[in-house]
Image 1: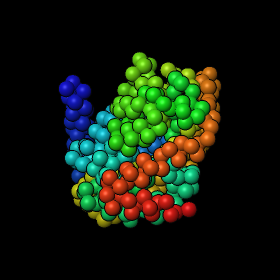
Image 2: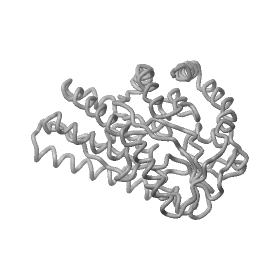
Image 3: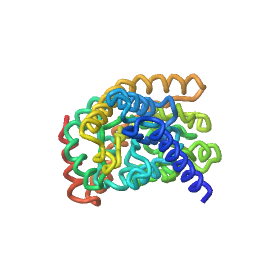
Amino acid sequence: MPGILKRLMTIAAIGTAAMVTLTSASSAQTVLKLGDIYAQTHSNSLADKRFAELVEKKTNGAVKVEVYLDSTLGNERELAESVIAGTIDIAPSGLSGIGRFVPDAQVLELPYLYRDLKHMQRVAMAIAPDVDKMFQAKKIKNLGYLFLGPRSLASRKEINTLSDMRGLRLRVPESPLYVGFARALGAVPTPIPFPEVYTSLETGVADAAEGEPATLATTKWYEPTKSVSLTKHIWHYRFFAMNGDKFNSLPQEQQKAVLESAQEAMEYQVGLVEEFNNKALDEIKGAGVKIVETKDLDAFAKALVEFNTEFAKKLGPTAEALLQKVRTIQ
């Protein structure tokens, strides 16, 4: 209860600040609140800030985006819930957040689905109409995509081969996909909210946590684990999710500015992914952490083929069709 109250008080304070801004500035100014879970220096956070700058510039100050990072307004699930409720306006979110409301889109985060970042970008262009339709049905406007990956493991135990996954207490996001993925590899899935991961590793509640190198570095999850194993199991999207009613309430020229700003922020973030991952691995190595080049990743992928197919099947024909579409894109 105290955590919930604290979050509500924070959001209320933000609302009050927005009212003051509206009163002191032009009466036509619109203030949008954007929340994200990542630290200030993460590529997604830099994209959030670039988006805010672009919106203000393109609307000549008529629309201001206030950016709240580092889980200030809640974890990924809570941020997605807040966007749906209209408590905040925008929250870039992976499928452990917004996927709860658009379940068919969860197939886009299945393991070993994409070869690399360029492949992901081609897929994003091809599936955009399908994703937009899914989001609109839930009154969410997807402004665009951010990219993360490939995810690997910060682990107390070195993961050299698939057999090393057996019995590993692996922290995963609060998502059926990640729970199932861990179980399919023989690990013990341990769902823990993002802000609590470091402590769970430090205290031994979890043996390992997974994320792309930039996340492992900015969160310092490698500190309690002392090794990072490059399983490279998931490339994934984060959707630039905006409350649909709020988006529709904007004048057409402001909607255009918001969409253009999101597109430019996406292009900016794509350019940071590989650079940030390489810098992150250098930082992790520099901290004396062992980097393990996990062997035979094809064995990991093969172990997950049935899981991927069954996961889509349980979601239904729309999810199965989307997965099939992704698999046909080269």
